[in-house]
Amino acid sequence: MIAFDPSLMEATGNPYLGLRPFRPEHANLYFGREEQVAEMLGCLERGRFLALVGESGVGKSSLVAAGLFPELMRGAVGARYRKWTTVRFQPGLRPMHGLAAAVSRAAGNAEGAAALESSLFLSSLGLTQEIRRLGWCQHSNVLLFCDQFE
Image (cartoon, rainbow, N blue to C red):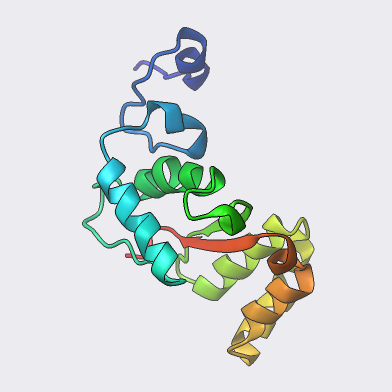
């Protein structure tokens, strides 16, 4: 058995990640999907919702993380959309719990997850109220990335 040491990749500059997903810090190594990234950006310019659908294992998560996220941070959707607060979560068996935990972590208040989860169940505006309470909308745009939704 051979153990893989991920730090070796960074140390040698090897651009091949193998089967590991790309992350935002790998944007300089991610190419060939510019057309799909442009299409996603166009969807976000026209509306506030984007659903990326495809079979498991085709690279949806990498497309968002190393393709879309870096372009958003560069202001590809316009000057007023330059600053983003991104919340990435996996719904798992308890989607509201996963969402509440991710928002709370992003806000630096992991202990607040239980209260937010209750709020999500009590009101259809629970998430909106929490985002407003955190003041995220005043300083940035908010991108919720629900990964592994299948």
